[in-house]
Amino acid sequence: MSKGTSFGIPTELETQLARMIVGAIGSVEKVRFVSSGTEAVMTAIRLARGCTHRDKIVKFIGCYHGHVDHMLVQAGSGAMTLGSPSSPGIPKDFTKHTILLPYNNHNMLEKAFDKYKNKIAAVIVEPIAGNMGVVLPQEGFLKTIRRLCTKNGSILIFDEVITGFRIRYGSVQELFDVRADLTCLGKIIGGGFPIGACGGKSELMDRLAPTGKIYQAGTLSGNPVCVAAGIETLKLLKSKRIYSALGSATEILCTGLSETLIERGIEHSINRIGSMFTIFFRRGKVTDYDSAVESDTGMYAKFHNSMLREGIYLPPSQFEACFVSTEHKPKDIERTILAARKIKL
Image 1 (cartoon, helix red, strand yellow):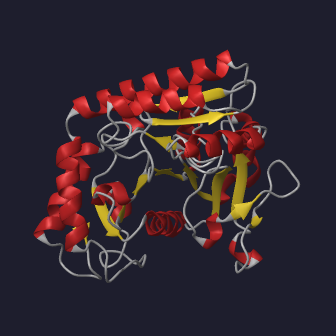
Image 2 (cartoon, one colour):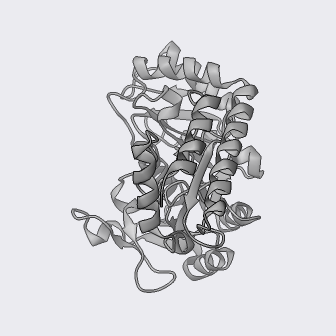
């Protein structure tokens, strides 16, 4: 099911795309199209608050969920504080109900639920973090979130604007054996065009207007150009061979880059899953925001600029993720590794 432009009846194209998403993600029974990933998050949070009649939202430091006011928060002085605005133009009252916790920290999550008990409407998380560099969930972390949300009547929101249809066809929820209550998707379901979606259980989605009282509407939601592009994109992505090839190409690239850096005695670690990866210039594993920011950003800048002079354009920030696409052919992977061997650091 899909509700598209304003409160209009879903078009045939919208219905087709919605059915493809529902068929691809087991936890999604109904879909509401919006115009961006940010709008999808905004819708999911409003829906969670409206369904639970609670205000507080748990998010994890280093995860990005769009430029929604109450998601643009920074940590306070304590380890488990309510957030304060991280951008000018956001009143403090807008973020006072956002609880910031360290990613991959089971104990702090348990303490947050003990402290705020029946006040937490939802926990929102990138199941694979992609905005402090690529950081994978540690064993059992996502299942701990699921267990605590179920136990306390809170809603689990997976922000899959990055991971949805990128690591595998559909969601990574099957990969980690964790089902979210609400899932947020972004431009990938429109082939790169401006679109987003919030999907989940029927009992939750039916609470959105016009069938329910929780308001959401958008004149350009589910516009036909984006929806048509999304349908064709998902048709192409349905082949498992695409994901297998992307994973193999990324593994070859990361192995080659790592071997080159090891030969030069440059400390680093690489986090990778599927076609996503990040090179962190630091010793040891990166498992959360604190370990990510210990990276040598000066070394990354040198690496980035040197690679750029060789015609290889990497993300300009240490904390952005790299993505390999189907347009990157074996010769491109080889050229990138050769460039890394050639540059001077």
